[in-house]
Figure 1 (tube, rainbow, N blue to C red):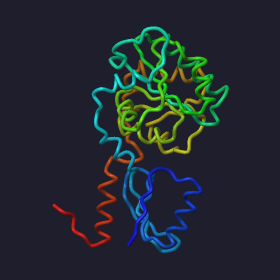
Figure 2 (cartoon, rainbow, N blue to C red; figure 1 turned 45 degrees about the horizontal axis):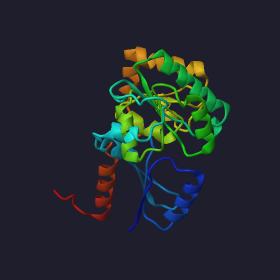
Figure 3 (cartoon, rainbow, N blue to C red; figure 1 turned 90 degrees about the vertical axis):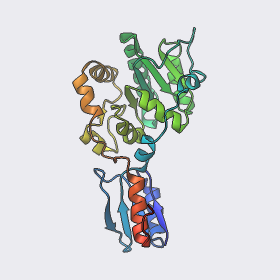
Figure 4 (cartoon, helix red, strand yellow; figure 1 turned 45 degrees about the vertical axis):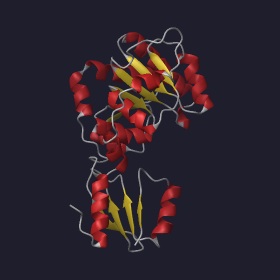
Length: 264
């Protein structure tokens, strides 16, 4: 018997490939079904499909803390003037922005908002993880390079990025994956888009759509920084993408299918 395990949302291309493969393969573990349960469904070909919570939530919750993360990041950030010590000792906002629809004016507006936020809150640090897209890098550097307490860093490896999410107080992003991962770490996510393909996260209250209007970004960030009740409501909301136990559930299903008792 053979099985396929999917992680994350599937594009139409991947879904088509999966349907073709599943004509020959027995089981598929597909994530992303609301809220966190494991259940069986049957494909058109009659094969069983096991839906489980997101495996990425499982990995994110188990990523070890990196004690030297400040020094690792400090080697990557760009800032004119002396680099400030203790950059991780204060409230931290983590930012990513790279989606095609945000290129140009929308990205410029995002940067304007970040610049204003940094001026308003002198005890706040902002780390912006730069995408490799030259259009993103040029626009972000044009507006934010040299701004005190805003650190522009090169792309970060996954383990360190998860640690940054854990260390952050708020995350601003247009990334779909982060909308799934950050809530499992108890971090509110402000989505820099007008709509999202992950509406269950919005419904669950783990993320909030803020778009790219500077005033909206500033107001929603200010609300989370100053209103502890609002912050707690988002940070404690149940992640619709799982509880971190996807791997155990997948193993249990596979062992059951194969008729193997779980080793003690």
